[in-house]
Length: 196
Image (cartoon, rainbow, N blue to C red):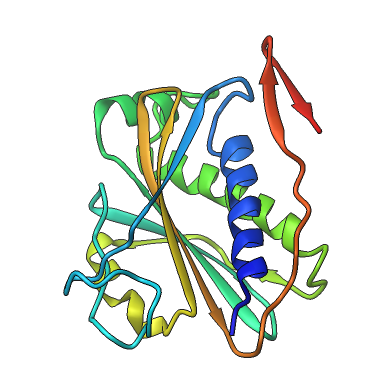
């Protein structure tokens, strides 16, 4: 129901959004590693989403959920920020409010990332709506299959060689979905952000 071109487009769009919005400075490194998402019965994702019961919990006790919806499909972005000293130091101590919690920082930066994805998608799908972000227990990842996703991709992300998070991109389509997004490549050069 979702073409390979559409799956590749979602990945390109997410990668650009992650590199420009999950970092607090445009020159900071952002290493994105695709991972095999496994359900609890150890089947790899990619087959029938109704098999199996859930997905891996990931690196934290909480998952931040953001949704982009159209008439024909819904994108659910799930972000799990590692609850460790390096991740907290990178995100929670940035900006003017140095005493904010990691949850507050994660909600803010996750919303920016989802907004960047939305901006790219609106070029292909003009009628989109973005939800208010909310936080759930990571145990809810066990029930991701209840959404009956047509496509699930997960990535382990390391920002500035220290902060860690996992992003899971879940696409549920109610009709055939096919598009090809042309996303500008982001390159870092001598401390400058260049778009090609």
